[in-house]
Length: 457
Image (cartoon, rainbow, N blue to C red; front, top):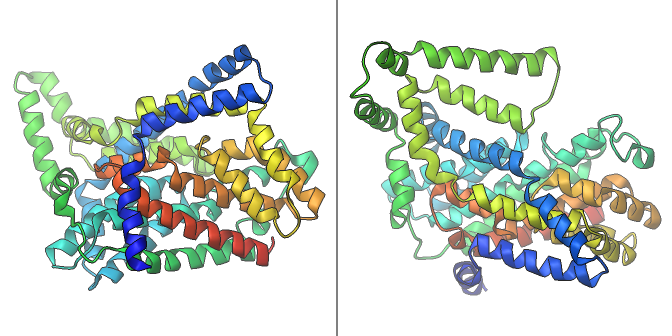
């Protein structure tokens, strides 16, 4: 059994098309499906075009998130903190445990922390493990940290849970305002948050190859780790700054080398964050997270020349999302702006009973999440149908919301969409992680459905 699971984890990725090719293939299939359920070609085409551009802001947010988190993650402060933790494990199992728990903890507070910083944690832990002769398979560790971030679905940044807890939300007339205590604070959600990281580590330990591939087998990832110690990035940035500034004189040279300008910009960003969180009492969102990372990145660099050099060296982590997300937007548009998304969800809803409701809702969530890479967007698409189905079979809207979160994350773990992001940060091919992510996704799905069936919200 163990050998079969290892072969699946190592081999299945070779059969997965490139992320962009996968997105185009999904788009073609959905266009055909939309036509088959009665949408006209012009309506389907209009849905595709509307979707093609609806993720522009999200694309830039994700690009900045990845770019700035790489700068922060490569800084001396972050490297020092992670390296101090990375020396604690004394075995491959302990390496998995600490790395997964660290990433899961970050993700519980905000989903983007796990996605952006989890791969950097995996790189640091793999580097330290190899240095001390601890055998750790880097693709397995990287996929495990990514899977560990799944608990954000029931964490403090759960978009659907936050949405339905907000007065005036679009389903308030149907579900009312649902407090967080009955969604992410429910017994079932807490059980999943506690149990999944522990079971994930056990499964990762089971499927880790006997002949693991260390970090050194991935030159680009190893190079990133090697330049991320306390002084190397600053030295490299200073060297690049010196080269780029060789012709700068007087005020131009001062503006590029002065510590005052990045501190001034950091002060303005910090003032806005204070106003956002303290004066307005607003919660963390994607823009405030990017702003927080910008603040940290500015504070961790000595001058604007070094900041620019750090950005330049980090661009490699985010290049693919710039166009890929627009194709995914087209895919999401076909689902959202034709009747196809509702048809898919309604087909699952008609088959539901109180016992099968969590399973079928999670399956519907998985099917849509593969094409719609947004938890909040998925709730907008499926929230009404899920709530209606819950009422029809005697389940609660909270149970539907949580089950949809199980399906949403399953889709995230098996779709190339987020794997491309994680692999981009670590600078490896996402297909090297895919098999492991599929196995870990199945664990998440089975555990989540089981808990929500036995412990309904």
